[in-house]
Image (tube, rainbow, N blue to C red; front, side, top):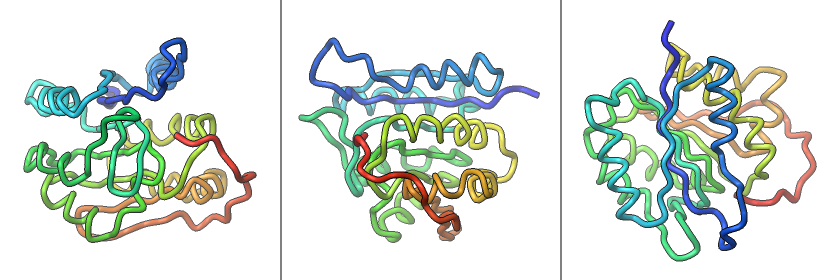
Length: 206
């Protein structure tokens, strides 16, 4: 069976050019384990974000059905750098009607703390199957551990609710709950994990 494809756009996390933090090692690990194929690009400005979104949504990349937005975030907003950010509405308008069957993951602090109405509108405009991410600030290492499972399930699960089923397991639900993970589906249904969080607080934020 062909490995699922993940298209990742990563913001520029650090002011210091010597810093090397990136989601790339997580993607490379999953690729080496035979779980996924991936394309990874950096985006520091809205123009760069728009350029790579347009490229990803070309027919030739149709089998990269998972969109992974790895960047800082705020409710309803993606922060590419300390100086550049984009609203979810702007991202939706750029991808309007071109995301049929896509599963969109915002690996960013608090983006999914947007209202249900905002996220449902985002799905209606883009045509994506689901959007998922975090409602709170998340720790880099904890979210990276979570992503090793989540990206595999999003890329390879045949059912749209595959991530929900996996992340509501006894093993992963406490971490999913602690991270404030949630999923909104195109049919309007919303899901949060049922497990009780048991992880220490005060993370270093994405």
